[in-house]
Image 1 (cartoon, each protein chain N blue to C red):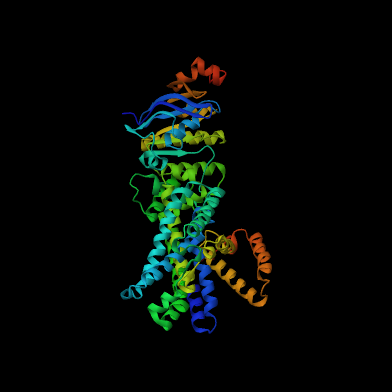
Image 2: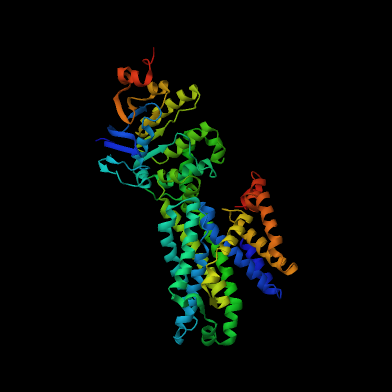
Amino acid sequence: MFGVYLIMFLIGFTMPGMWQVVALLAFYCALGQSWNIFMGMTGYVDFGYVTFIALGTYGMALGVQYFHQFEWLGIGIIFIGIFLALFLASLSALLEAAIALRLRGAYFAIACIGINEGLRYFIEGAKIWGGSEGIIFSGALLKTFGREMANQLTTFWADFAVFMVAVLAAFLNIHYMRSKIGYALTAVREDEDAAKVMGIDTTKYKTIAFLTSGLLGATVGAFAWGLKLRHVFPADVFVIYYTIECVVVVLLGGAGTLLGPVVGGLIYGLSKYWLAVIFPGFQLLIFAPIIIFIIVAFPGGIIGWVKQRIKGTPLQRYIE
Amino acid sequence: MALLKLENITKSFGGLMAVNNVSLEIQPGEAIGVVGPNGSGKTTLFNVINGVYLPDGGKVIFEERDITRMPPHKRAPLGIGRTFQIPRPFSSASVQENVAVGVMFGTLSGKVGVDESLDIADRYVELVGLTPHRDKEAGSLTPVEKKLMEMARALAMKPKLLLMDEALAGMHPKDIDEMVVFLKKIKEEENIAIVAMVEHIMRAVVGFAERVIVMHQGKKLVDAPTAMALKDQRVVDVYLGRPVGE
């Protein structure tokens, strides 16, 4: 799994013109894995997940925009941006956990969408953080770092950081699966009431997974949308469409598996990219039936299907 | 000292009084059969004891501690184990992992790591005779195997009080006799008070229980040593139809 990332990184680094493609793939892999840590392990579907990515983007924007006037901070403003991204995301994650995690199934999904939309209109209506005009901080970046360094930050380091988040998400996924947290969450997913009676503090473990997943999403947002694009508008970031992309990535690859989101991210990212190159304008028309076909043919996702096929063979222990 | 004391427990759902002013005591290491027809309040009583439902009135006292409002996940480590009428395994996990969950979260120490829990789980898997199925997904077991697995999972929590909801329903009479022998052995070895809910398998009640509590329409009808309870005229009238053994 880490091998896959290494190969992707090397391809992007050595082949001219491939870096953008690889960065796009890393973005989907990172998001898929981050979303999967919560959904795959608990069975709760968070349709408002994009809230975290959006708040991460805002964190980075606020950090750079409001702190660049303190020149002595230098590169520190990026770290302040990350810190704010994590801070805003944990605040919203804990709040959502307190309210929405008490609900199950469709009610949970709807509550999360509600919070996402509410937050967007709150920012626009109350005119905080620039309201609907958003924050454009490319100027602040230029002023602090100069043209060359700012360019490097936004074109190389932002993508590189997304890569690192993907690796971190994989690492956390493995760690959780093998620790008590994984056992507790499996129990929650299979039968939450039985889990409680077995002595599992279900709220605690659900919150851990929710928070982890949210913080990873916020970091992806801070780099891939914030630092890379250098602006944030509420109407662009609080968009459920991106949650759907996470869902598709995870379902394609296999929910609750380690490799699933990576395979899903690769397939989704690659086909989206190539279809846009080959049939510009028609990509979604062609893309939708392909996704429907894969999900109908492999209900457990591609990794889920492979897992079923190799069950009981020596290959089994290589796929999780 | 009583292990568990219920004082005037009342629980209703809408207009239905599921449990009506029930008081009882359970001593450490006792074997008790709770019998009564469908809808007599047995399952509700269990759910009040392990915290799935909060009672509308009355108190639940475990080892002299008032646990009436304590959430279920905190009660389990105190020593309250439970098996379900329809087994509720964590289907995608293996038998060993299911039992290990009991070790990890259901014991008071709470400091047992994953690997150690899996080792300890092996002992309980063996105890119920499921070692050949150790690595199977729990969802793929037969109904009887699932019941045994639940049993191992509950025992792995090192309970002082084990609530068994219809543990014997649907079993072959031969298996029931084996199970009764097994339960008695476990009870002696680990000093667990076992409260088994039984709807209509009287041979199990006679074989296993030292004391019988008969529930009827949410109320405790009779609470007496087994032989006496089953001869009680009220029990014969509302529940048995004719005395057991005739």
